[in-house]
Length: 292
Image 1 (cartoon, one colour):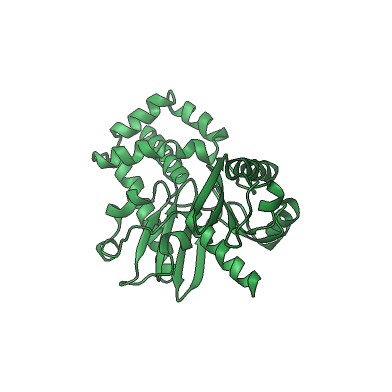
Image 2 (cartoon, helix red, strand yellow):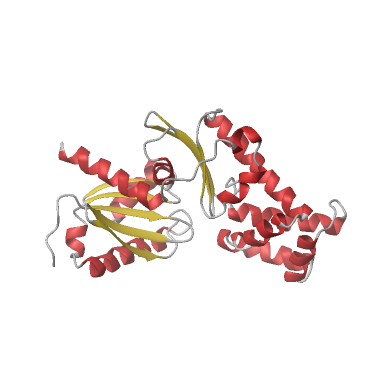
Protein backbone atom coordinates (compact mmCIF):
# COMPACT_ATOMS: atom_id res chain seq x y z
CA UNK A 1 0.00 0.00 0.00
CA UNK A 2 1.24 3.49 -0.88
CA UNK A 3 2.24 6.14 1.65
CA UNK A 4 -0.53 8.66 2.38
CA UNK A 5 0.19 12.34 1.77
CA UNK A 6 -0.86 14.93 4.35
CA UNK A 7 -2.93 16.75 1.72
CA UNK A 8 -5.29 13.83 1.20
CA UNK A 9 -8.98 14.24 2.04
CA UNK A 10 -12.05 12.07 1.56
CA UNK A 11 -15.45 13.22 0.32
CA UNK A 12 -18.79 11.45 0.05
CA UNK A 13 -21.58 12.81 -2.17
CA UNK A 14 -24.73 10.71 -1.97
CA UNK A 15 -28.20 11.27 -3.37
CA UNK A 16 -31.31 9.57 -4.63
CA UNK A 17 -29.62 8.24 -7.76
CA UNK A 18 -26.00 7.49 -6.87
CA UNK A 19 -23.26 7.79 -4.26
CA UNK A 20 -19.69 8.82 -5.01
CA UNK A 21 -16.76 8.42 -2.64
CA UNK A 22 -13.67 10.41 -3.61
CA UNK A 23 -10.06 10.56 -2.50
CA UNK A 24 -8.37 13.83 -3.40
CA UNK A 25 -4.91 15.34 -3.01
CA UNK A 26 -2.66 17.79 -4.86
CA UNK A 27 -2.12 15.22 -7.62
CA UNK A 28 -5.75 14.60 -8.46
CA UNK A 29 -8.92 12.77 -7.48
CA UNK A 30 -9.92 9.10 -7.52
CA UNK A 31 -13.65 8.32 -7.43
CA UNK A 32 -15.70 5.20 -6.71
CA UNK A 33 -19.38 5.27 -7.63
CA UNK A 34 -22.17 3.11 -6.18
CA UNK A 35 -25.97 3.25 -5.94
CA UNK A 36 -28.60 5.34 -4.16
CA UNK A 37 -27.68 6.74 -0.73
CA UNK A 38 -30.71 8.63 0.58
CA UNK A 39 -30.54 7.89 4.30
CA UNK A 40 -34.08 9.03 5.05
CA UNK A 41 -35.69 6.59 2.65
CA UNK A 42 -33.23 3.72 3.31
CA UNK A 43 -30.72 4.32 6.10
CA UNK A 44 -29.15 0.85 6.08
CA UNK A 45 -29.00 0.81 2.29
CA UNK A 46 -27.26 4.19 2.26
CA UNK A 47 -24.65 2.98 4.74
CA UNK A 48 -24.03 -0.12 2.61
CA UNK A 49 -23.46 2.00 -0.50
CA UNK A 50 -21.01 4.28 1.30
CA UNK A 51 -19.03 1.35 2.70
CA UNK A 52 -19.00 -0.34 -0.69
CA UNK A 53 -17.71 2.86 -2.24
CA UNK A 54 -15.02 3.11 0.43
CA UNK A 55 -13.83 -0.43 -0.27
CA UNK A 56 -13.92 0.13 -4.04
CA UNK A 57 -11.92 3.32 -3.55
CA UNK A 58 -9.34 1.48 -1.43
CA UNK A 59 -8.79 -1.02 -4.24
CA UNK A 60 -8.57 1.70 -6.90
CA UNK A 61 -6.16 3.87 -4.91
CA UNK A 62 -4.18 1.01 -3.33
CA UNK A 63 -4.67 2.59 0.08
CA UNK A 64 -6.00 0.42 2.90
CA UNK A 65 -9.57 1.18 4.06
CA UNK A 66 -8.26 1.68 7.60
CA UNK A 67 -6.01 4.50 6.34
CA UNK A 68 -8.81 6.13 4.33
CA UNK A 69 -11.04 6.12 7.41
CA UNK A 70 -8.52 8.33 9.20
CA UNK A 71 -8.51 11.10 6.59
CA UNK A 72 -10.48 14.34 7.04
CA UNK A 73 -13.85 13.49 5.51
CA UNK A 74 -16.86 15.51 4.43
CA UNK A 75 -20.06 13.52 4.01
CA UNK A 76 -22.95 15.15 2.14
CA UNK A 77 -26.02 12.93 1.85
CA UNK A 78 -29.61 13.27 0.77
CA UNK A 79 -31.91 12.63 3.70
CA UNK A 80 -29.83 14.21 6.48
CA UNK A 81 -32.76 16.10 7.94
CA UNK A 82 -31.09 17.46 11.07
CA UNK A 83 -28.62 16.86 13.91
CA UNK A 84 -30.28 13.63 15.04
CA UNK A 85 -29.77 12.00 11.63
CA UNK A 86 -26.21 13.36 11.46
CA UNK A 87 -25.45 11.83 14.87
CA UNK A 88 -26.94 8.51 13.78
CA UNK A 89 -24.73 8.53 10.70
CA UNK A 90 -21.67 9.48 12.74
CA UNK A 91 -22.22 6.40 14.88
CA UNK A 92 -22.75 4.13 11.85
CA UNK A 93 -19.87 5.33 9.67
CA UNK A 94 -16.21 4.48 10.32
CA UNK A 95 -14.62 7.89 9.71
CA UNK A 96 -12.48 9.42 12.47
CA UNK A 97 -12.41 13.08 11.36
CA UNK A 98 -15.75 13.79 9.76
CA UNK A 99 -18.34 16.46 9.13
CA UNK A 100 -21.79 15.25 8.08
CA UNK A 101 -24.32 17.45 6.31
CA UNK A 102 -27.16 16.98 3.88
CA UNK A 103 -26.31 17.11 0.16
CA UNK A 104 -27.06 20.81 -0.28
CA UNK A 105 -23.87 22.55 0.97
CA UNK A 106 -21.68 20.48 -1.36
CA UNK A 107 -23.84 21.33 -4.36
CA UNK A 108 -23.81 25.03 -3.47
CA UNK A 109 -20.04 25.13 -2.93
CA UNK A 110 -19.37 23.11 -6.06
CA UNK A 111 -21.47 25.37 -8.28
CA UNK A 112 -20.35 28.73 -6.90
CA UNK A 113 -16.89 28.11 -5.47
CA UNK A 114 -16.14 31.23 -3.41
CA UNK A 115 -18.46 33.44 -5.52
CA UNK A 116 -21.58 35.15 -4.26
CA UNK A 117 -24.69 33.76 -5.92
CA UNK A 118 -27.66 31.43 -5.78
CA UNK A 119 -28.41 27.99 -7.12
CA UNK A 120 -31.56 26.10 -7.95
CA UNK A 121 -30.58 22.45 -7.78
CA UNK A 122 -33.08 20.27 -9.63
CA UNK A 123 -32.17 16.60 -9.81
CA UNK A 124 -34.22 13.66 -8.58
CA UNK A 125 -35.10 16.05 -5.73
CA UNK A 126 -34.61 19.81 -5.48
CA UNK A 127 -33.43 22.57 -3.19
CA UNK A 128 -32.30 26.20 -3.31
CA UNK A 129 -29.26 27.92 -1.85
CA UNK A 130 -27.60 31.32 -1.60
CA UNK A 131 -23.99 32.13 -0.73
CA UNK A 132 -22.96 35.67 0.18
CA UNK A 133 -19.59 36.55 1.73
CA UNK A 134 -18.97 32.87 2.39
CA UNK A 135 -22.19 32.39 4.35
CA UNK A 136 -24.74 29.87 3.11
CA UNK A 137 -28.49 29.87 3.38
CA UNK A 138 -30.49 26.89 2.16
CA UNK A 139 -34.15 26.06 1.60
CA UNK A 140 -36.20 23.20 0.22
CA UNK A 141 -35.05 19.63 -0.05
CA UNK A 142 -37.92 18.33 2.05
CA UNK A 143 -38.49 15.26 -0.09
CA UNK A 144 -41.03 14.11 -2.67
CA UNK A 145 -44.07 14.08 -0.39
CA UNK A 146 -43.79 17.56 1.09
CA UNK A 147 -41.46 19.38 -1.29
CA UNK A 148 -38.91 18.93 -4.11
CA UNK A 149 -40.72 21.37 -6.40
CA UNK A 150 -39.24 21.61 -9.90
CA UNK A 151 -37.31 18.37 -9.44
CA UNK A 152 -37.31 15.57 -11.99
CA UNK A 153 -39.78 13.56 -9.93
CA UNK A 154 -41.99 16.64 -9.55
CA UNK A 155 -41.97 17.16 -13.33
CA UNK A 156 -42.94 13.54 -13.97
CA UNK A 157 -45.60 13.48 -11.27
CA UNK A 158 -47.08 16.85 -12.31
CA UNK A 159 -47.24 15.82 -15.97
CA UNK A 160 -49.13 12.66 -15.04
CA UNK A 161 -51.57 14.71 -12.96
CA UNK A 162 -52.24 17.10 -15.84
CA UNK A 163 -52.66 14.15 -18.21
CA UNK A 164 -55.41 12.90 -15.92
CA UNK A 165 -57.00 16.35 -16.02
CA UNK A 166 -57.30 16.00 -19.79
CA UNK A 167 -59.36 12.83 -19.25
CA UNK A 168 -61.79 14.87 -17.15
CA UNK A 169 -61.84 17.72 -19.64
CA UNK A 170 -60.28 20.15 -17.16
CA UNK A 171 -57.25 20.64 -19.40
CA UNK A 172 -56.83 20.56 -23.16
CA UNK A 173 -55.23 17.37 -24.39
CA UNK A 174 -51.83 17.34 -26.08
CA UNK A 175 -49.43 14.92 -27.75
CA UNK A 176 -47.66 14.42 -24.41
CA UNK A 177 -50.92 13.73 -22.59
CA UNK A 178 -51.89 11.16 -25.20
CA UNK A 179 -48.43 9.60 -25.07
CA UNK A 180 -48.55 9.25 -21.29
CA UNK A 181 -52.04 7.78 -21.34
CA UNK A 182 -50.92 5.32 -24.00
CA UNK A 183 -47.74 4.46 -22.11
CA UNK A 184 -49.66 3.47 -18.97
CA UNK A 185 -52.69 2.06 -20.81
CA UNK A 186 -55.09 4.77 -19.75
CA UNK A 187 -55.96 6.68 -16.60
CA UNK A 188 -56.26 3.55 -14.40
CA UNK A 189 -52.73 2.59 -15.38
CA UNK A 190 -51.39 6.03 -14.42
CA UNK A 191 -53.09 5.74 -11.03
CA UNK A 192 -51.66 2.23 -10.49
CA UNK A 193 -48.18 3.42 -11.41
CA UNK A 194 -48.37 6.47 -9.14
CA UNK A 195 -49.53 4.37 -6.20
CA UNK A 196 -46.21 2.53 -5.96
CA UNK A 197 -43.75 4.68 -7.96
CA UNK A 198 -40.65 5.98 -6.19
CA UNK A 199 -39.05 9.37 -6.97
CA UNK A 200 -36.61 7.81 -9.43
CA UNK A 201 -39.49 6.23 -11.37
CA UNK A 202 -41.36 9.54 -11.56
CA UNK A 203 -38.12 11.29 -12.50
CA UNK A 204 -37.56 8.91 -15.40
CA UNK A 205 -40.53 10.60 -17.10
CA UNK A 206 -38.98 14.07 -16.93
CA UNK A 207 -36.95 13.80 -20.18
CA UNK A 208 -40.18 13.08 -22.07
CA UNK A 209 -41.67 16.28 -20.64
CA UNK A 210 -38.66 18.51 -21.35
CA UNK A 211 -38.39 17.16 -24.90
CA UNK A 212 -42.10 17.69 -25.52
CA UNK A 213 -41.83 21.24 -24.18
CA UNK A 214 -38.95 21.89 -26.56
CA UNK A 215 -41.26 20.95 -29.42
CA UNK A 216 -44.06 23.22 -28.21
CA UNK A 217 -46.36 20.76 -26.43
CA UNK A 218 -48.85 22.80 -24.37
CA UNK A 219 -49.07 20.38 -21.45
CA UNK A 220 -45.27 20.12 -21.19
CA UNK A 221 -44.82 23.89 -21.39
CA UNK A 222 -47.42 24.30 -18.63
CA UNK A 223 -45.43 21.96 -16.38
CA UNK A 224 -42.10 23.68 -17.10
CA UNK A 225 -43.58 27.14 -16.48
CA UNK A 226 -45.00 25.94 -13.18
CA UNK A 227 -41.57 24.60 -12.20
CA UNK A 228 -39.90 27.88 -13.18
CA UNK A 229 -42.43 29.76 -11.03
CA UNK A 230 -41.49 27.57 -8.06
CA UNK A 231 -37.80 28.27 -8.68
CA UNK A 232 -38.43 32.02 -8.83
CA UNK A 233 -40.53 32.04 -5.67
CA UNK A 234 -37.95 30.06 -3.73
CA UNK A 235 -34.88 32.00 -4.89
CA UNK A 236 -36.43 35.38 -4.14
CA UNK A 237 -37.39 34.16 -0.67
CA UNK A 238 -33.77 33.30 0.21
CA UNK A 239 -32.25 36.52 -1.08
CA UNK A 240 -31.78 36.50 -4.83
CA UNK A 241 -31.69 39.96 -6.35
CA UNK A 242 -30.76 41.35 -9.76
CA UNK A 243 -27.00 41.33 -10.16
CA UNK A 244 -26.54 38.10 -8.18
CA UNK A 245 -25.30 35.12 -10.20
CA UNK A 246 -27.74 32.24 -10.69
CA UNK A 247 -26.73 28.65 -11.44
CA UNK A 248 -29.21 25.97 -12.46
CA UNK A 249 -27.76 22.64 -11.36
CA UNK A 250 -28.77 19.00 -11.21
CA UNK A 251 -29.76 16.80 -14.11
CA UNK A 252 -32.94 18.70 -14.95
CA UNK A 253 -32.12 22.24 -13.77
CA UNK A 254 -30.79 23.70 -17.02
CA UNK A 255 -34.08 22.93 -18.78
CA UNK A 256 -35.81 25.68 -16.78
CA UNK A 257 -33.58 28.52 -17.98
CA UNK A 258 -35.74 29.64 -20.88
CA UNK A 259 -38.86 29.68 -18.69
CA UNK A 260 -37.48 32.16 -16.15
CA UNK A 261 -38.22 35.89 -16.28
CA UNK A 262 -35.73 38.08 -18.13
CA UNK A 263 -34.20 39.58 -14.98
CA UNK A 264 -33.21 36.08 -13.84
CA UNK A 265 -32.21 34.81 -17.27
CA UNK A 266 -29.57 37.51 -17.71
CA UNK A 267 -27.91 36.43 -14.43
CA UNK A 268 -27.58 32.76 -15.43
CA UNK A 269 -24.04 31.42 -15.19
CA UNK A 270 -22.63 27.95 -15.71
CA UNK A 271 -21.80 26.15 -12.45
CA UNK A 272 -18.09 25.97 -11.72
CA UNK A 273 -18.24 22.32 -10.75
CA UNK A 274 -20.42 19.43 -9.57
CA UNK A 275 -21.43 18.66 -5.97
CA UNK A 276 -18.54 16.22 -5.59
CA UNK A 277 -16.06 19.05 -6.12
CA UNK A 278 -17.92 21.04 -3.48
CA UNK A 279 -17.71 18.10 -1.07
CA UNK A 280 -13.97 17.89 -1.68
CA UNK A 281 -13.58 21.63 -1.02
CA UNK A 282 -15.53 21.28 2.23
CA UNK A 283 -13.34 18.32 3.22
CA UNK A 284 -10.30 20.54 2.65
CA UNK A 285 -11.86 23.20 4.89
CA UNK A 286 -12.29 20.52 7.57
CA UNK A 287 -8.65 19.43 7.18
CA UNK A 288 -7.46 23.02 7.69
CA UNK A 289 -9.59 23.38 10.81
CA UNK A 290 -8.29 20.07 12.18
CA UNK A 291 -4.68 21.13 11.54
CA UNK A 292 -4.94 24.29 13.65
